[in-house]
Amino acid sequence: MRSWDRSPLPELLLKTLPHARDLALPAYATDGSVGMDLAAAVQNDIVIEPGPAGLVPTGIMIAVPDGYEAQIRPRSGLALEHSITIPNSPGTVDPDYRGEVKVILLNLGNSPFRISRGMRIAQMVIVPAVRASIKVVKELPATDRGEGGFGHSGE
Image 1 (cartoon, rainbow, N blue to C red):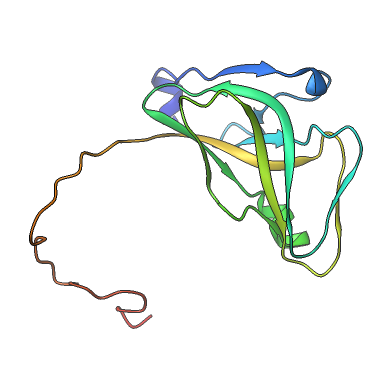
Image 2: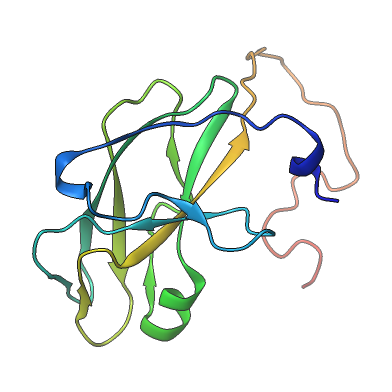
């Protein structure tokens, strides 16, 4: 039994905008999926050229529950097959944002990539988010790692 089968789910409020009324709502593809597919709400095909990023509307607005964030992540198939990714991955939709969810897509490949209406362009994952208070100190607690950064473990 999955954890979401036995506990109450956070409620994500969703408003569909006029330019997306005929498109599929975000949905989980399988019972085990944690990401909901997001569709492109473009009127006409758009092309993302290699190099510059493009902004793709989804035609939805959401109200994320307090204590959560919506993370916008790349779709693995688009990344593997077409080198399409999200440069700020994961993108965050905060609980107080009420504008249209749009996805920044970046073409890392060598060929232009065409996005058509209704194409699944990203996935959205709803995750708990914790805020922290800041306490300024003169010294941080010591650890075995210390200041070891990238590659500190030899891998």
